[in-house]
Image 1 (tube, rainbow, N blue to C red):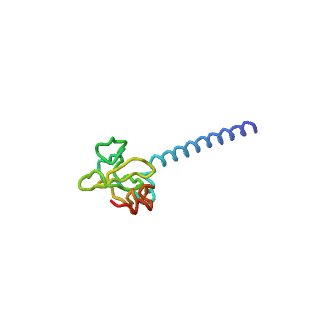
Image 2 (cartoon, rainbow, N blue to C red):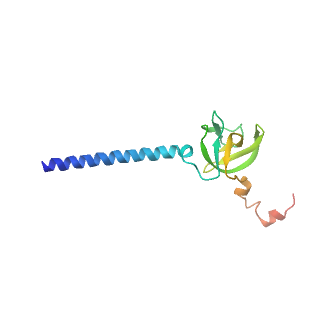
Image 3 (cartoon, rainbow, N blue to C red):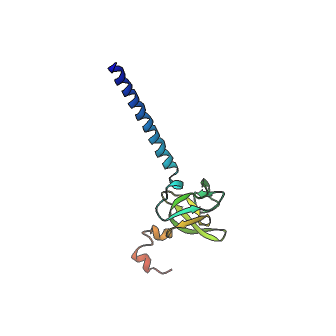
Length: 136
C-alpha cells in the first residue's frame, strides 16, 4: 500500500513538473513573440499609427522588399533615422533596433529622441581630425 502511494506521488510530481515546465515554456514563447506589442521597449521607440499596419522594409524606400508587417499600435525600438524617400511629406525613415530593417516615420509616433544614423553610428572616415578639417 505504501509503495502504491509513493508511486502515485511520484507520478503526480512528474506530471506537475511536465505541466509547469510546459506552461512556462509557452509563456516565454508568448512573451518573446509579443515582446514588441506587450512590453514597452526602452526609448526611443515607435508606435505604429497606420490602421492597416506598417510595412517593414529591407531598405528605406517603397521600392524595397517588404519583410513583414507591423500591426496597428505595435511598439518597436528605434535605432536611428535617416532622410530618404519622402512619404506623404515626411522624409525620415527609422532603422529598427536590433535589426537591419526600416520603417517610414510617416506612420510612426516616436517616443524619445531618435538620433540621425550618422550621429548614432559615426564612421571612422567622417569622424576623424582630417575629415573635420577637409573642405567640401
